[in-house]
Length: 331
Length: 149
Image 1 (cartoon, rainbow over the protein chains, first blue to last red):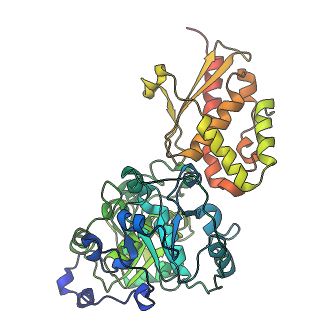
Image 2 (cartoon, rainbow over the protein chains, first blue to last red; image 1 turned 30 degrees about the vertical axis):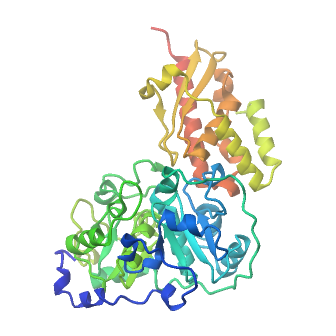
Image 3 (cartoon, each protein chain N blue to C red; image 1 turned 45 degrees about the vertical axis):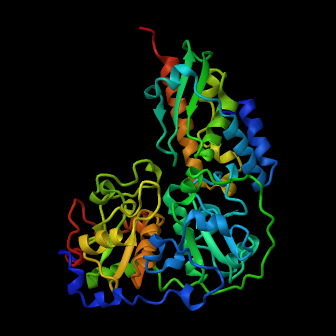
């Protein structure tokens, strides 16, 4: 898409008032929603909790807190009381295939962490919840119904002077069922992105502007994770993930987010959207925003992202500020 | 190429542990990383950034004199929120600080992969430590062979 569409003229905008039901609502458990007015505005308010809510629910036996950070040791320096650690490198990725863990491994991971299938999971982490959003997205591939993010993540909890402990929680293994992982709804592969180009469906590049234009092949501080070529997927619009976050790591309000993605970029809640970044972690953050805070019905995260696309053979790219024409790229 | 005795001892300590204890040992190294001396804390621009690490870290070497026997001192600056990176720095500090230029330059570039940390920490994260080691060695090579003006 080259020209931003007005949301009011889009037939899909009718979906804005009645978004697709969130799975968490179809299998409601007893864990209440955070009634904070900012959170109540979001499309799926059960997907986000504030620090105050979490502090009040730490003793709730059906609320399981998970810390997921970029730094594998940060949890061990002190974590929210009762929280368990889930590491994206060593626990969520398959060690051999570039993929996530399989159904049996996921069931074992959840059991080892003391998490039951009906439990409410609250995930938080460093770096404005990048890795926490990534963990939430992976948990969602396995259809864990009630998984929520802590607004503001680790930094906000800490900034508020709330308790952190190095005490390891007592974990009671659970009987987590082996459930089929379903990639179809929220995960995009390279072939899906190629099909997306043909349809000229919206793609969102959430990397830094320098990565988007091709000036850099990696994030400013991550030179080892680059790609052979710099640029973006033809037709992709640039919306750096951080635009969805406030300085303290909390999410912007629903109206601010709608202004950013719909008014500015022309996305409508009924659109079929694919988001990508470098390896799929920052785009998990954007996936969360579009799916759960704005209620978009069909958002997929392309976790192969630029490390795959930027290195793949016979795959077109575009450099510079403009999205470029996805159709021209096919010739 | 050979690993200095002190550094080898650290590698042996990690090898003897299970993954959870390896992380705890790495955390100990992160806590033991000495703070920057005031002369550098006041002038952080003198330190070299290590962009291979996922978290910001800066390092500086001092080489007393020139030649293979010149004594090397190491200084690091990394935030508390980056304990893994601090842990890597702590290992290098503990194992290399005070050694001769020759000994520091003899450390094989793949030393980080000999710490038995691949499964506990992941190879990708260990690349940050390789970046620190390469930068330390480059600085030491330059400084120990510099001709005095």
